[in-house]
Length: 373
Image 1 (cartoon, rainbow, N blue to C red):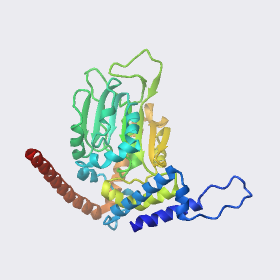
Image 2 (tube, one colour):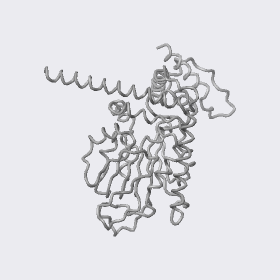
Image 3 (spheres, helix red, strand yellow):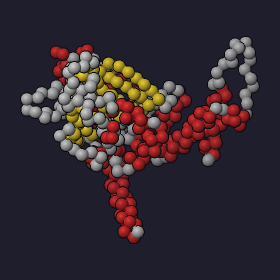
């Protein structure tokens, strides 16, 4: 509690020292008020934000405790995606409250409902977007994730059929083409690629985006495309990547908090939440069509398209170059992380087994309660 009060006073000082200038440029600023007066006069959004920041600070202290990156491991390139193998069974319970009351579920719905034609969802996780697809507008849906534990949870939310399939592989590997439902049908690529909360957990976010783009179709699709695409519409859209991510904020104080807690959060949850998503999109070389930001700028909505150099005759050359870069970067990261990285994965595998055992015990206890009642 004393830590929270300390943060309260620090945040009050920030508000007092960063207040906007008075309207009259010749008027001297009023003397600083006491902490109590500042927060009594603060608008309700400021008060709510101040409590949220206090909660986040406590969370940062909690996840940082005991979360130490081994010597010799570069935090910026540490692959923490294997953490999802441990948290798969409890992931939905952990994030559902936050997503429901922060408006994240609404953003997921808006993003996914833009999907058209042949659709690939990379890093599908536990399938939190499953309820939002409109199957009258898509021809096929491929759900991909490298964690077999996450895919197992996602399968419980779907009825796999001819229109929907699951694939367990990394999104940094060559992507499978869209399914061919008819022998004479040749699909060039995906019309829509979707990824939500994915750039935070990959060690090569720029190449991750380039590889997703390598799976895009080099053609336009009707805006109302479905399994029987309409041909009477003049509105056509190019193939597109739709992203919903979290990363750096508009505000320096928020970014300082994200940087401070990033290592602990990454080792605890498998996510580097302090990445500059806009810079990653720019460095990927893809064409950025649209950016929206919410939650102090930490939630990013991006729409990307293939660059000119990845279309037409140069397309295969661009794809081959992307795959060479991925292979070279992967080798470089493995050499840098070395034995320390392997030891972390070994320890995490032990935690995963312990988590599975605890989950099994919890299910057994619930079953015994049901039988007694």
